[in-house]
Each structure stands twice: as C-alpha cells, then as structure tokens.
Image (tube, rainbow, N blue to C red):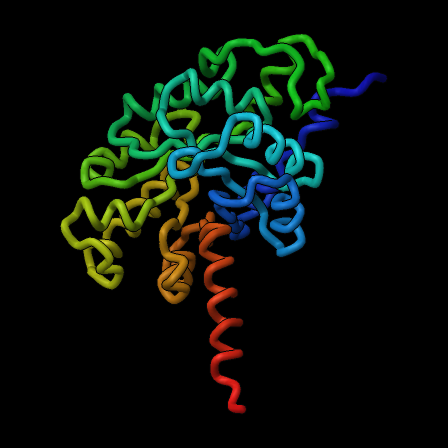
Length: 267
C-alpha cells in the first residue's frame, strides 16, 4: 500500500483545537532566518504566523520559514497584506498551512477568502503541482484536495465595528475556521484606542465567542500581549487561539529587562 497524503500532512494545531485545547502562536516580523521556527517550537508554541501585512519579508523568506516549521510539526500561518487570490494562493503554495485575512468586514469578503484558500469543490484555488506540505510528492486531485482542504486553515480578523455588525454572517461562512480579534485596530475603530478595560471590548469578545461556539468555530485573541489578565479572561470565556506577540516585542522586552538589571547593580 502506497503513501497517502494524510500520512504526510497532519495539522497538530487543528487536532488540539478539536480537542478543545488552547493553542498559542508567535508572530514573526523581524527574524528572517529559518532558525526562528525551531526557536518557537522549543519555546512551546503551537504555531507561528509570518506577518506580511506589517513587515518587509519576501515570499522567498516566507517560504523557507514555513517549510522549516512544517518539518518540525509547527503550524505555519501567513497574514497576507491583501485578501486577494494572488496573495492567498501564493503563500499557501509555498508552505503556509493557513492564512490570516485582516480587516474582514462582511460575509461576502469571508466567502472570497475561503474561495481563494480552498481547492474545489470548496473553493476555486488553482492546482499548483507538487506542494512542500506533502514533501513535493504528486497525488491525484481526488486524494490531494480533500486532505489539503481539511488541513488548510482560514483565519479571519475582526478589526472594525463593521466586522461586529456582520459577525454572524462572517462566522457562519463555511470554510472559516478561526475568528481572530485584532484588539488594537478594533478599539481604535470603536474610538476607544488602547482602552482594553472598556466594556465595549469585552462585549465584542463575548459576541464573537458566542457565535463561534454556535457555529463550531474558534475565537482567537490578538493584540493583548501586554495584558495577560485579559487573555486569561477571554480564554475562560471560550477563546481558544492566542496570538501572544511578536518576535521583535519579545526581543525588546527581554533585552530591556537585562539592561535594567545591570543598571541597578550597585558598585
């Protein structure tokens, strides 16, 4: 019996989510070496996401990091700079196991993202030949497409009041897996930028979590690296995906701490 696509590609993050476990992710904006994937894995993260919306990373660098992550069982996602088929299909073809689509405002936009990310019959993604996810092995479409569709995750972001106004139609969209709340952009659009304790933010999380539970999707927490207390609160409410912060944020934080430790030494 030959090797099947499902023997090679197994999305461990998706397995954890299906078992109602909380998963963590680290955003990558600074480190361009493939070593960052192993560092994230060693640190205990379940996934990484390369932020092409807010970085200067090339597609070549993105591909190398994604493939390094795939090889060690770490789920690599990419936040695309535009929710267009040209960006979505390319990052998936070069190794991403899912995409993060920013600024989704309604169900139509969510449907378009799913269509770009999924192979037929669930979408219109074009065949790209042998894929790094399957060790560049070739499989017939009848075997390839179901496995890739099942393991490729679509994460949409709520970053505006309009997103909340259309929350149910977005979350109900077939093919959407996770709704990641971009807390900073959302509070800014609400006119309460940075006011993380504002009751409107909690209401937004409660609405999103409730609808995700209704439609058997998952809610994600983003932009709250400085407020682990709120992350804890939203996870207890039902959120299951946590974006913990960026590589540059982690580096600055620990470097500042170490520099201050030396400054405080009394001679």
